[in-house]
Image (cartoon, rainbow, N blue to C red):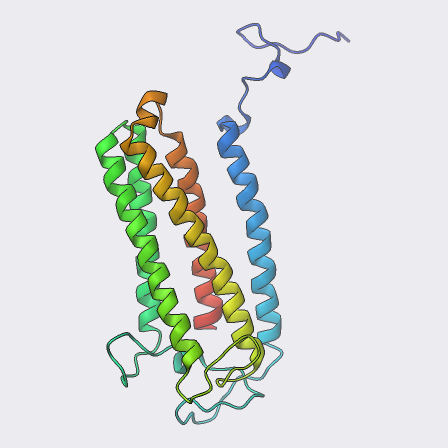
Length: 238
């Protein structure tokens, strides 16, 4: 058997580089590896939440106000029913639904930015990246309000990593940790999006002749949005 490496049409050895795996560049491949490892982390956190959640009985009696037994797992519709500027009105899951819609729409604008980059349309990339940044900042602002409302509470006790007026302390601890971990990802994504926006304005990608960085950061942003769908399902619907 010949020890000579297999060659391609150009005469270069396949071991000499220039053969992108799965037709993906090195940068995109590394981004996929990072997202895969991050997916394992979020999966572990959500599985932990699910196991602790179902170790507690669900409250099935008549709920009066926000008084929950420490034995029963809180009902999401009774915990997350407040909306800014509409104090005293019970609107279960409306506000978190708005948050979810904002984040999903920011994913749509990111798709449009990537598509514009493929067309080398600098102005459109600027426009859609700006909207993506605004969407991310709006989501973070909404999450900050939700956290402050949850900490303040309605019965005077509120919730923290060690105390929860709504039910078992584990509920609040997992809520703050997992949503905070996701919020950190969103914040990092906003910073990356701003960097891409700045580079686009200054013509960095025009000089490079491609907008691949927009696509790579877009992969991260879509991942963050997808993770939120699972966080939303576990915390607010189950």
